[in-house]
Image (cartoon, one colour):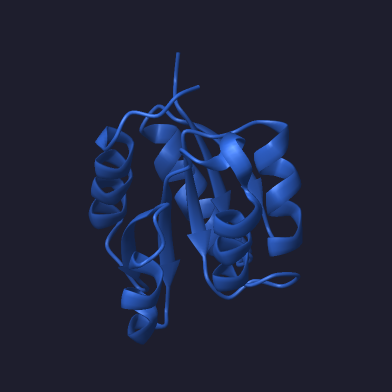
Length: 128
């Protein structure tokens, strides 16, 4: 059974590129194009990994991670996240969240993206 990744990216071109990359890697991919849709999507079906852009309409990535950490409860406790952002200066802020396994600064190489996804999925086991 393939692993599921929730890709949260508002830029349609970037979202399309990353969806293709993930599907080519054998992953099942669900998408959200704004932050407001993420929490319902997580509670509906917890993915094996979430790839999260920072600058999003509806709710930005920082607010979203803060909300997950504060209100996620047991269901979201094992969620793993790869953060992607053009704001490199925010890397340490995001790596302080327990759910975040890595941070990629845009623009990034697709090979670096694939490696970050593989690394995040290979980290800590989590209850299902």
